[in-house]
Image: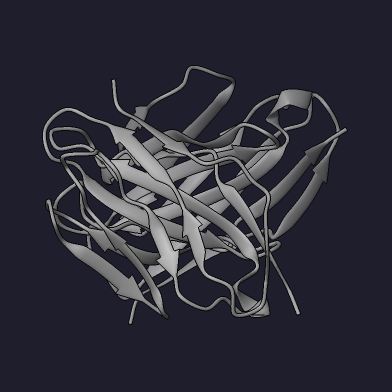
Length: 113
Length: 113
C-alpha cells in the first residue's frame, strides 16, 4: 500500500532563516506531487505541483521554492523565512489523471518567530 | 473561476443527531467533488468522493450526492458520534487543470456526548 511521509512534524524558525521540508511517497511510481499550505483563517492553498522529476509548477508567487530530485521525493524550501510563512504545510500525491484523488501526508507545523 | 463555498461553522451537535454540512460549487465543465476530514493536529483524510452527476459517495456513515442542477455536494450523516468531531473540507478538481484541489473554507463540527 502507498504511504506518504513528511518531516519534520513541527518546526520553529526565526525570521530570515532558511527552510527545508521534505515529503516522500512509498508504494507507487511516478506520482503527481503537491504542496499545500493551510494558514490560520485562510483555508488551504496550493503552492506547487509536480508531474515528474525536475518538473515544478508554482501556483502562488512567493519566497518559497520546490524541488523534486527523485521520483518520490518533494522538497519545499526557502532562503529567508517571513512571518507570513507560518502555517501548516501539507504534501499530497495522486496517480493517473490530474483530477484523480489526492492523498495527504500528516503535515508540518511551521512557526516563524 | 472555480470555487467552493461551505456553510460557516462551527456546527455543534449532540451525539446521535443528524448532520448536514452544505457545500456548493462553481466550476467549468464537470468537476470531481470530494469531502476531506481533518482531525486536530493531523493531515487531511479523504472521506468520500463523486466524479459525475448523480453519483453518491459514501464512507463511515457519511454520504454526499453530486447534484449538478443545484451545483451542490452536501455532506450528511444520520447519527453523529463524538469521534466525528473534526474539520470538514469540501473540494473540487476541475477538468483540464493540473489536479489542483480547490477547497472550501472548512466547517468545524463539534459533537457533544
